[in-house]
Length: 107
Length: 118
Image 1 (cartoon, rainbow over the protein chains, first blue to last red):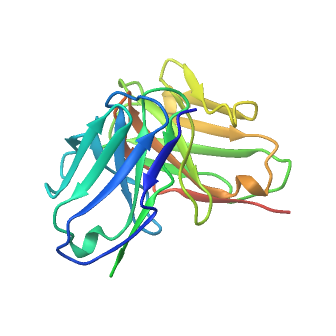
Image 2 (image 1 turned 60 degrees about the horizontal axis):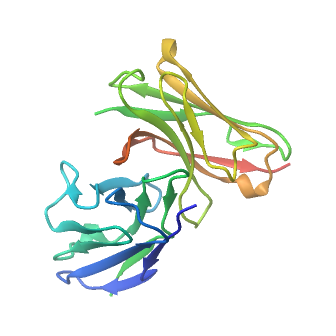
């Protein structure tokens, strides 16, 4: 199985901050990586697919980059509604796997 | 936008079989998508269980493969999950989702909590 390791696991930041979350894969996955946002009691929401393509309706302050084994999700200017848990998922090979999550909290 | 709705018992006895159905609306289950199940134990991360195509082709997580069956009912525009020999470790919120190959899960159900307990 391909392991995905997100860092950090917890992140404390303020409204207006720029934050970056990293997702590292245990082997190359090309650009077959998605990022999700999950709020408490809600289903995950797809933010980015193919490593860097913004899903329709997602604010442009979210961006993704990377290929191979290292990927990043960046939020350029945090808004109050962005405080949530973020997961990466690889879709290169079976079984599909998720990172352990990064919880973004208000400082 | 496709809507998905999970349904099924919220309580299953240990060693029993967990059975859930995901009803799809706003789109056809025979479209070029995969239909997947993902679970999340309370307070923990996401685990992909498996997926099915409308043709009946499936892919399962090897960690669950011996206990999992995913099936599709095109006449009812729905797909289902069966997980046998459940234990407390299978207690989780179960989500169904519409997945595009190599892209991700674009639409999700709201999730349903299944508790394994006697």
